[in-house]
Image 1 (spheres, rainbow, N blue to C red):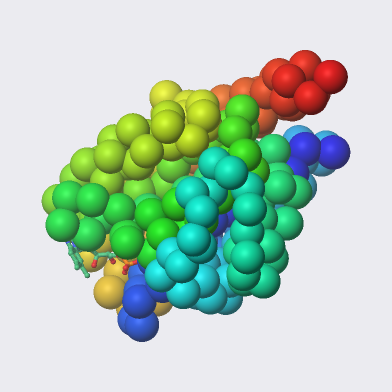
Image 2: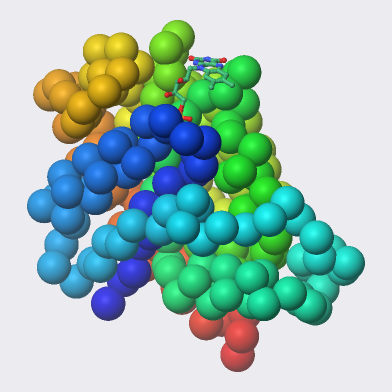
Length: 192
Ligand SMILES: Cc1cc2nc3c(=O)[nH]c(=O)nc-3n(C[C@H](O)[C@H](O)[C@H](O)COP(=O)(O)O)c2cc1C
């Protein structure tokens, strides 16, 4: 079984992230093979405080229970779909905080993106996130989904993605599944 998490990155009240995450989960489950499990991981439910671990995550010396809980969640997945709303040409601080809490749990895994924003479908936020994920040894796939806030992501109500977005989602998930499965071999090689 290959396990993928749809990570809902924005935690602010009134966020669109929860609705976009639901769309990714529902459409994504219909698109991935039956050997792939797709779950929702909502950072609002994970409830991490601002990073308060005394040692850098690369040392893996977690003193807080919330970090150990987050570590167990991330360690259980082979890959991630980051749901990324654009905040001032970046991705939400809540997502950066969640990434910074861990290190080894992200290593040699794959990620894809579903971005959304009013200007360019979250494209700038996605590109920033790729840089940070590179440092965490996460391989990011080429294709991303980019949704227009106010059109495909209404201010209220469910996502109304068109054919272009549906095609991008299918392509991104295809790339993600093959890389997530290939990188499992890399992780096993690193451990042996
Ligand atoms: C603090 C903040 C900054 C924003 N900056 C941008 C931006 O730089 N580019 C953009 O396309 N949209 C921007 N927006 C609009 C967001 O993309 C839109 O509100 C989206 O719903 C945010 O994701 P969220 O609702 O899941 O938090 C911004 C929104 C917020 C709250």
